[in-house]
Image (cartoon, rainbow over all chains, first blue to last red; front, side, top):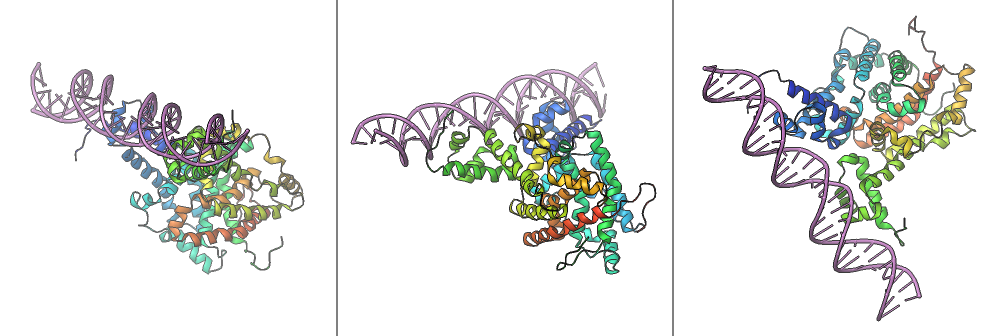
Length: 218
Length: 218
DNA sequence: GTTAATTTTAATCAAATGATTAAATAAGTT
DNA sequence: AACTTATTTAATCATTTGATTAAAATTAAC
């Protein structure tokens, strides 16, 4: 109904940034508005003054985070001037940098996707654009029809690429615990994966899948 | 201090099973004791009567679920009579069956691991046994030293296997939405992966990694 | 400088929630 | 049956928590 602030807006931005940190690390239910007030160092009532309600503030944060997770490499995958494998290399490179900067993002988004899948369509506006419209999808189809890469269902391919890229961040506390690594060492392993994952994907895509009936002998 | 029930114990079991369903689907903070009472169809006070507190009940469920997730294939991976690749085939086969029966398990465990990593050691009793003690670890070392498989850091290997197996269940609502599949079709894809993942892992392990300096040409 | 609008604060409210209690019912023991 | 023990129920408590309010402080407008 009305625009409220008229100067710097630092309070509003402080609250939002604090809310992002707290919501993404603890989730909606475990976060109290008092946590956000404390984290941002502002009076409790200002949260409702600037954002109306906890739920409204959460939705703002959630939409931004989901879009960051889902759309941060769309441009790369839609570039008509690069090959399929080059696209993968560049996208994985950028994505791993983004995940090192936002390690809590995947588990937050996965929770949102599992607990409120309807929000993807309602609030984030999914379902409009189709993944199959990206240029990389056309390239995949062409290369498959030409027999240049193995005929694997794209869901398997997407699952594998995203899994190998994202999962180590979701399971980081577990994998780090088991391997006795420091955060720094673990991040260096993630940087190694910038080169390794594209290589593994290329390997998978160019090595014949064994016949269901006669298992391969290696 | 005292043993409480003396006959069938169905009420206690009902509460526990209802708590497992509610806790694993909504998490600790979003679950109200009234949700568990309603889900199990018992009086609210019986939850505290049988389990003392919400937190105590949660810990019981949590430990069981984490152990199911982490230890359900340990026996297979420690079998001295099978080859490394056979172990992987059998373990992945069993694991995917387990995940189809418990699709909410991975996201629940990953949340616990991210939010309360100290509980892994304190309550589940991690840190005692070492993953490197399993028979499959010895086999990996032998094959690597013999040059039969690529010298890849075991963390990469474990990450890839677990990622390709588990991640499609964590991201199921997202991947299913994007591909327009039914739950049944999606599960069939997961069953396909029983054969595909071992094949991909074998491919990765037996295809030379390109030198860092001179990139491979395929 | 006075007035009006905006922002901040401290106090408070109402609803939700984990837990307890005392009484009632059921089951087991002698 | 009489008595003890275990289980279940409805009511209630004390805290927590999201939100509101009225007053104070700050900033902008004239």
